[in-house]
Image 1 (cartoon, rainbow over the protein chains, first blue to last red):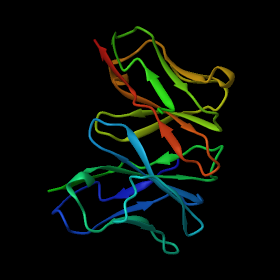
Image 2: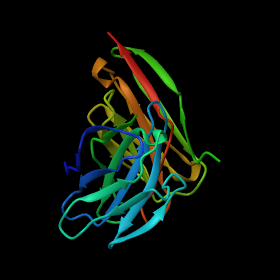
Image 3: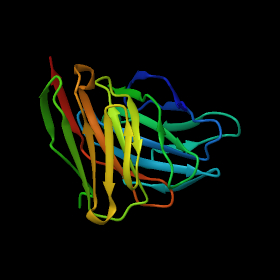
Image 4: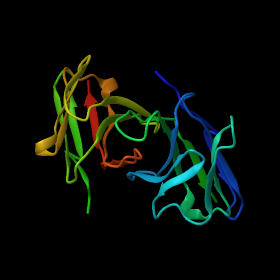
Length: 114
Length: 109
């Protein structure tokens, strides 16, 4: 089936440093998402992105978070500066349309902030 | 409040037994997906099923909108079915999914 690729698969970073998580969504998809899952906890929505703009974000999407997708490149999640509570697995997803369609998820990027 | 509730929270089966996993939701939906989360964390999409019944091998998903529930039936379970099963409800035009807490399935030989 369609594949969403995420890079890196895991990263360890010092608290206060910046991290960028990269996502290569399914090629013809238009809607992009980031989700966060802390170890042993529920998957939580962070943000969705369409037509170059953030359309919706949750309380978890702090001011230190930003997303972008420059033309023809990765959909990125940047955290600057990182905090200990940012340690989690971050999943990228994409969808052809915003609703009424399957979301395809990547394998996740495991972030450990020390 | 919690929009998506899954039951049971965990389930242990002998290989060959069947499993019925439930997902109840408190709001209207325009999409419903079932996922399998591997022990390593990656997600596999099992079904996109906003209404009706769908089959895939030993798996069957049934969503009844007016009863606000969806179920996942696993027949003749195998040890490789062990992992966490997540249901996710979509209620907005932008595709945002609300996940349940999952059912952890352990199948023993």
